[in-house]
Image: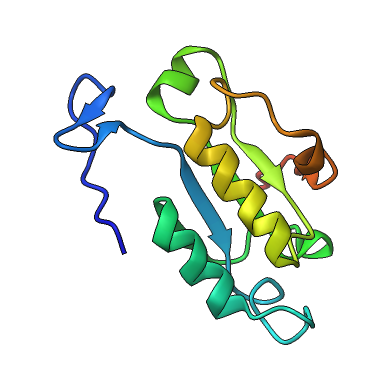
Length: 132
């Protein structure tokens, strides 16, 4: 598994690695990553992503109807270009996982357009409201 050190102050490069890549958040809690979503090896999916891109594991992201959820966060350059995180749902096959890896390695949000095939997985998460 590659080591992904923290961004330097410039936000643009990491020693020996070049530009700081996008980061991927993988939901793994009540539905995502559980036997509730059948036909996928969740551990293998996470391991495959980790082998290629920086990955963070999150508890439930509250969009269980879209399990398995993967959020692609833009790199520093992508954020500078105005990109926002891209939420992908129903990522339940190896081809989709490989498409995400290819897009992130090509630059991801703000740098490289979302591939048409990943548009099929993209969704807008509901806004959370805070109640007192």
